[in-house]
Length: 250
Image (cartoon, rainbow, N blue to C red; front, side, top):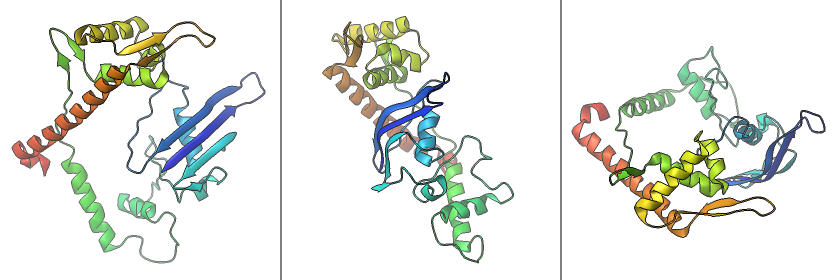
């Protein structure tokens, strides 16, 4: 489990270049969770990952991995609790070593070190099996679920708009993250509501902090149903792909 509790991080504090990168971030990830962080340039995505990895310390808050508070641990000591893959393949690897040797090095992270063979026969066999499994998954069906009448009104992009609206409590912020115009976002929502016959987004206007938007109860139910249906469709597509294209699936 990974927990981020009340994380704050400001760069160049007290100067004209002061930048609040993380403002009271709270996040809990359970074992097995797969999460994608979405945000525009400067939203704080890399800052959050660097804070978790220990690249720099946070101003306040706590970072807990499997019940261990690692907030004040330096990067090299925190490495025993967490792995990281960089976008640049030359980072985090030893370029003079073979691929299987890099894998063996990573597998020994956090374990006592001594003199011995860099990689065992069992490890080499395991890595070749992983490579075979990886190659078998290179060919796969790509399925996108869209729901239509005369017009398409619910598809992955609409679902993302709803999910981001619920997360940010703002249609405008959701549109900005998707690089979608505000008017197009509301037109998408209005078409969805017209086709369904009920509202999926509620909004309030004015107030000290301005207006906000959120999904209605039926909007949340719709999003959950669409996501669950999409997962079932994709799972079925994988099964049929293995049946009809066995040579590609092996």
